Length: 290
Ligand SMILES: NC(=O)c1ccc[n+]([C@@H]2O[C@H](COP(=O)([O-])OP(=O)(O)OC[C@H]3O[C@@H](n4cnc5c(N)ncnc54)[C@H](OP(=O)(O)O)[C@@H]3O)[C@@H](O)[C@H]2O)c1
Image 1 (tube, rainbow, N blue to C red):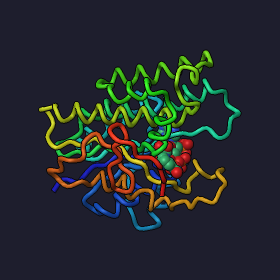
Image 2 (cartoon, protein in one colour):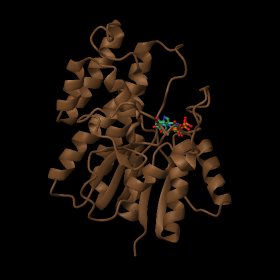
Image 3 (tube, protein in one colour):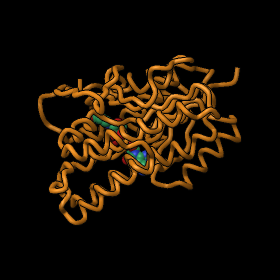
Image 4 (cartoon, rainbow, N blue to C red):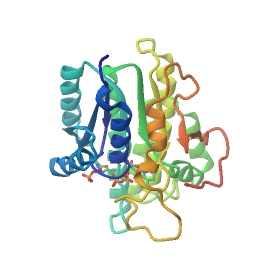
């Protein structure tokens, strides 16, 4: 039996590292699980952590802001394994505090959190095998940002039906933050939330497109929220809300990555705690993370 091949972006720490751990445990000798990082030293340190636990991830450099880096990983995997079975688009950034101007936060968040996901998916789709599972790590901040928007913008996110249309919405937000009238135009004042809303809308469109794509069999694209997880991203947060461990946060991403063959009801969805959150179709407020 050929090994299952999995790629997890931004997996040198936090939720991504925990996803690699869970996939390595699941597949054992029957898997080739790629822990990827944009920094070789941090990546190799993470590999060592898992090796000490008796696991055997592979390592590859990958910067999701760099298409050449994505193509190198894709081509190396194609040469060695012929294709990929699981792709988890986990890499993400969040600005801490308000020191960075809003227009920079908008451009930076959307570059990594939205375009990183879109470009990785487009780069890897040609080598995703039948039965493949593509999972983007979005967040429940996506519906939160959505509910903070004007009704007109909400309708546009509901109606958007092409990838170019979602990208146009992301660009429109960036341009409005440059002028500084994004709130007046109905956007939320929240770069991270808007970038994750972009991922949720992208997933919806990618799922619809995949359902019509006869060149692939049984390939599912979904996104999820890992919960509120104790990681480098949330380390500066204070407050009483309990945080999950990274291994707990990996549960829904791993569930989606291992959906059994022939699953038909999960395509283009946002999930939290293994449950679909259809916020484009119904009001899911109040939103609780854990
Ligand atoms: N923690 C939460 O409560 C929470 C809640 C909802 C959603 N999420 C999402 O979960 C995902 C994982 O976040 P986390 O909480 O585990 O935070 P984290 O520990 O900070 O992990 C983020 C990872 O993304 C990597 N990364 C950032 N930019 C990259 C790039 N250009 N190329 C490749 N890797 C890059 C980081 O690498 P470096 O070490 O090199 O920076 C790091 O390994 C993110 O998408 C985040 O938005 C987290």
